[in-house]
Length: 389
Ligand code: SAH
Image 1 (spheres, rainbow, N blue to C red):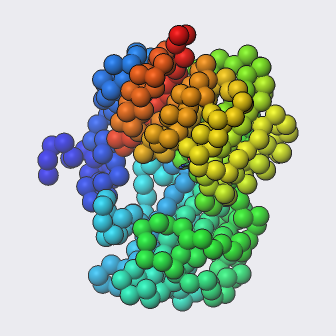
Image 2: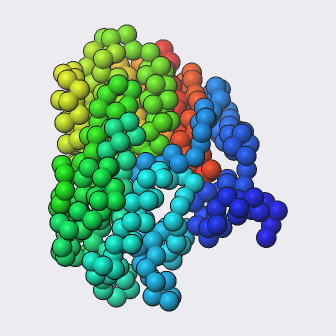
Image 3: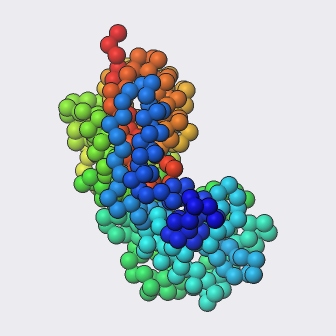
């Protein structure tokens, strides 16, 4: 055993096998130092980093927990995570990152399988039923969603299964069956059947209520998400009059929080379920100056840039791959006075910044928010201003 991993092995028995916590061997302060240094170096050509905002208690922050089900080579049912880059299941019962209640629910489900004669799915043969369990916990509402991902649509004695599960965990507010019969590394399939409750949960952030469906994107670390969103609003410096575009808006969280500070807000997002959740959220929060569109952000941006619509501020939060060239070119053409770029991947952020800074923008603010303690992942917010030409 190397010196480096010795301490981490005590904290987590599957540290090395799992691969999810690349920085577990380091004290939290040191993790933040490393992330700050990494960001400072990457952003140096464009501007200055204010620092990185860490968590006071960095454990158990993940409110979306996923477990893959299968059997070990002795035939015993196991649940856990795929070893990084493989389909080998590493059994995990408790995780330092995950919400503890979610972990307990997954263990209860594992314990119920035998008496309900539910077999775990075998990826090689396609035999068996239960593939994955996804648990989403509303941080401030306490509402809990359980998604059972099955290889085929029928769960025997489903009502009794829900009853037995809720007997152990009455705090579960909804249970959904998701059918994934494909040979794929995607967790969720297309078909869904709600077998208990409304089929979604709600959560509250920054004073707003958000609806979260099984497939909608919602930040996994709600405590830090509030910090993140507050910073986005600070960087946007809205006066109450601006037209704001929230690109890659997910369930519309950022746009809805910005809406009371803006003239009006337009949200664009590819995922249909997320857009449906966003529209429901706006209604629930009684926000009338926001509209959501389901589209590819690049296509949408091209249309906006080609119309006479004026946009003052673009808030963008693309996936890990960063934004597309199509989007960036159209963004520059649209020419908002301000851009606030939220990124979960500093490398693609730096690449996109290079483009924007060559095309008339300059970075005036930047800050890291540690959304993923113990892992190598870093979240960054950058504020850009259009240079007056
Ligand atoms: N701003 C949101 C979501 C950010 S995650 C939040 O804070 O919760 C990135 C989002 O981009 C996801 O919801 C994903 O579905 C969406 N997305 C990915 N590719 C896209 C594309 N080409 N066009 C529009 N949205 C896209």
